[in-house]
Length: 235
Ligand code: AMZ
Image (cartoon, helix red, strand yellow):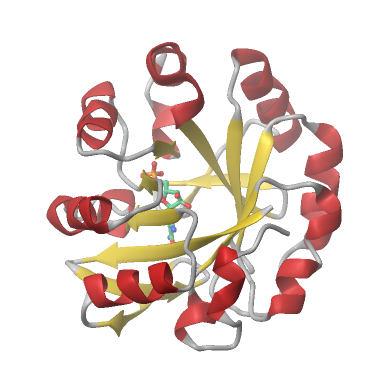
C-alpha cells in the first residue's frame, strides 16, 4: 500500500472541505506548486488531484491541475467533473496517468464501458459512500443501486481500481471507516484506494491489513498531524 497525496482545487485555489460540504471550504495553500514540491521532496509516489468545481458543476480548474501534472515527477490521477470521453481524452492528453470517474459512470449511459475499452487500467472509478450508499454530484445525490451490486457489476465490466471515500469521515481527521474497507476488500478483487479521515500515521497503519492499493491523505499533511515522510514508504 502506498500513500497518495491529495490536492483539491476550487476556484483556482488548493482547498479542503469537511464532509464534502461546499460551505466548509477554506483555502489551505496559496501556492500549489510550492506545496507539490514539498510533497515531492518527501517521496510522493502518486498525486491525486480533484477538481471540485468540476464535481459541483461550478467551472473547471484545468490550467492549475495541468501545471501540477507537468511539474510532478510521479503519476497523477485526476478526478472531478470528468463526465465524457472528451474530458477523459483531454486529461490523458495532458499527461494524467489515471482518470477518476464518479457521477458520469451513473449518469452517462455507456461511458464506463467506452472508457475501459480505450484506457483500461488508467480508469479509476470513484465510489463516494455514505452509510453504504453511493453519492454523486458533489455528494449531494444518492444512487439507488446497492453498493454491493455496484461492486459486482464494475468488477465484471473489468474495472481494475476503485477509489472509495467515506463521505462522513472526509476532512474530519478521526480515522477511516475500517469496517467498510474490511468488508469491501473481502468482497472484491479490484484494487482499492481508501480515502477519508486520516489524521495520523497510525490511521494509515490501521488500513495495512486490508491489502489496499493506496490510501489518500490530504488534510493530515496540511495540518502536519502525519509525518510527510510516509509518502515515500511502501506499507
Ligand atoms: O468533496 C466533495 N463534495 C466531492 C469530492 N471530493 N465531491 C466529489 N468529489 C470527488 C470524488 C471523486 O474523486 O471523490 O470528485 C470525484 C468525482 O467527481 P465526479 O464529477 O466525477 O462525480
